[in-house]
Picture (tube, rainbow, N blue to C red):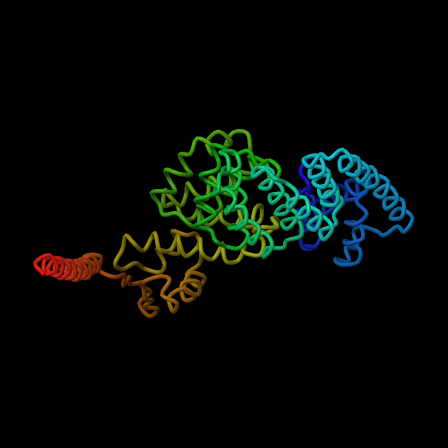
Length: 394
C-alpha cells in the first residue's frame, strides 16, 4: 500500500465538494471512515475535524483516544528497534528504522512529524538510491496535503540526486511524479511530455494506477498538443488503445481527442462537457483548472476550424459545433480581444473573417533576421582571424 494512501486524499477532496452527486460522496465517506478506523489514523482524524471541519466524518472522543493509544504502542516498538540497532552499531539499520518511523507518521496522517522524521532518516542514509526514495515519500506527503510549494521544492532536490547517478527505475518514476505535479499547477505542455513518456515504463503505482496515468496523459495532451502529434502520441498510442475496451472511463477522453482530430466539432463539444463532469470537476488535481481547461479546449476547436477559412458565416460555424449563434458570438468575443483567436466578427452580416498572420511573410521576416545574425557572427569571426594573424606577424 502507498504511504500515505493518496486515494484517501481524493476522498477528502470529494467530501469537501458538496455539489457533487450524493452517491459519490457517500462512497467516499465510507472509504475514509473505514480507513481511519482500520489504520488507527488518529492524526488524520484530528486534522479532518479541527483543520478542515469535515462534518461528514463525525467526531468521537473515545475512538480518537483509543487510536492514539494504539499509535503510541506501535511507535514504541519502532523506537525500540532503532535503539537496538544503535547499540549494535548498525548505521544502515538505524537509518532504516527512522524511515519506518517516518512512514508510520505519513501513514496515519501527521504531516509535520512525517516530514521531520523522514528528513532525519535522509541525513542518516548513505545510499543515493535510498535518499531518492525518502524524498519521493516526502513528496507524496506533500501531495496528500496539497502542499504544492513543498512538492515542487522536493522534486528539484530529487532531480539533483538523479543527475548524480539515479538508476533507470527512479528516473522513470520521476517522470510520473514531475508530470503529475505539472498537471496540478496547470503546466499542461510539460505534463503531457512527461506523462506520455512515462506510459511505456510506468512503475509509480504508489501515486496512481496505470489506468489513471493514461487518462492524465490524455487530458494534458488534449489541450497541449497540436493535431498531428495528438494523433501519433495519443490516438494511435498502444497504451491508450489497449485500455479502450477494458476501461469505460477512458471513452469520453478518446471521443474528445478523436473528434477533435477528425474535425467532428459537434461530437467534440459534447465529449468535452462529459469530460468536464466525469474527469475534471471530480479530480483533486484537475478541479482547480477545470474552467480554464474547458475554455482552452473550446478555443482550440474554434481555431482549428477557422484555419481552413478566410470567411465563414456565424450560422454555419454554430451548426458545426452544435451551439446557438448567440452562444458562439458571445464565446468568440471572449477570445478575440486577447488575440487568442485571429478573427473578427461582422455581426451585421453574420460573418466571421479570419485575419491570421501571413505565414510566408512571417517566414521571410525570420529568414532576414537569421541572415543578419549570421552576417554579424561572420564579421566577428573575420575580425578575430585578422587579429590572430596580426599577433603571429608581430
